Length: 342
Image 1: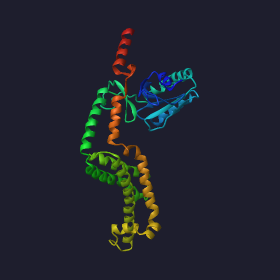
Image 2 (image 1 turned 90 degrees about the vertical axis):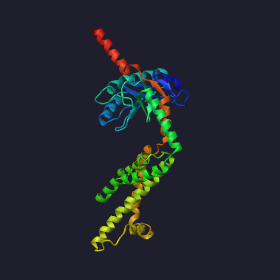
Image 3 (image 1 turned 135 degrees about the horizontal axis):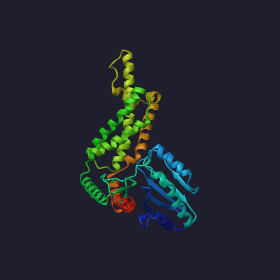
Image 4 (image 1 turned 120 degrees about the vertical axis):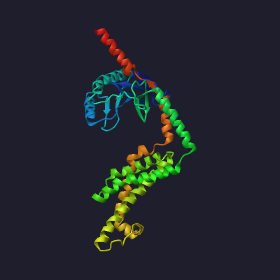
């Protein structure tokens, strides 16, 4: 069975026709699903939920144990997606496994206590969505006109920033943002004398958003600046903490005011003193910065160009919302059912 045939058996509407990996958008149990066939005989279903909590993950894992041995479900708490992988040898087996998997998962997915079914447009927040599209890397309901408006707005912004990138303003914002982001890490280090590595993730995030808030064009230059500046600020946090410790010692020795910040900095540039007293903590600070960059990587590597390309893709790559999940269709069906009953 070809990959195209395997994607068609889902009944979803195919997108990106001609791509190496066939893809299609649809819904199961009210949850948007992107189906793909990365290799022969393997169908992947990526479900896009608002957010998975521990209770939802447990319910999914319990349902996953009831699935066929050739169907694997992977779900992790705090993520917004979970994946079902179906492996088969022929079309008949693939179709049967897909239909069986849908039947077994629908009761769990429709449990309002576990899953908040997406109904609001991801752009404007209103109801009555008419399309499914990938926005922010996640398949979501939306209004087609909202996607078009977003595309035009971001195109205009990109043209404006191309003509006036405001690099200096962005740089100033990044400098201020990084310093603000370093405050929690410094306070915890100074009070508890511990490196809480997660707090250092705030430094690159704050520098990145500071750059954006000041109107600078977000490009690869922004990413490079955020990485280098985060390392510098993290090291500066360690230097400042060391200075306060040394100043406290000088006060105990009756030498208050005898050490300046520049004296502490000079110690760091004295090889013998640095390697004997400060190297370990400096390496921890730099390691914390790298750890922070790693955590924030998905955010700080986003550029205006990438955001524009994503908006263009969202406005051009969509499928109609399945009729049974459109609000007006559901209301009409409900009214018809009540009429028939009466």
